Amino acid sequence: MSDNVHVFHNEAESRFEVRQEGHRAELTYQRSGKEILFTATWVPAALEGRGIAGALVRSGLDYAREQQLTVEPLCPFVKSYIERKPEYQGLVKQESTGGFA
Image (cartoon, rainbow, N blue to C red):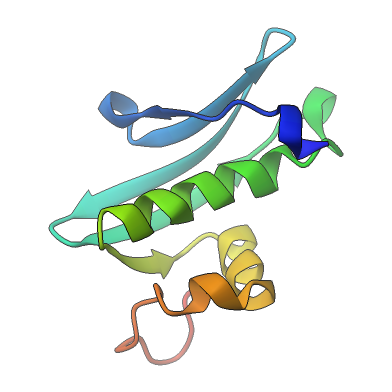
């Protein structure tokens, strides 16, 4: 289902967005130098179950890879997504101890 999801990178607001049916889903982040901290993923109830959260996170992680950024997944959904997707695990900040939450 997420194949039909268009993710927009709103750099001015530091978030990746999906707008559908008058609703906005988002993945928010903070960027500092060569590091990006993914802080929250939010999908309104009206848009749940469509693969939108995964599409947002995939877009954010692909952006991090393209920009050669180190990722710190503060958002539990982003952290669990990375844990399930080995292709993104190399992006995670390695010097973190005691978890990401």
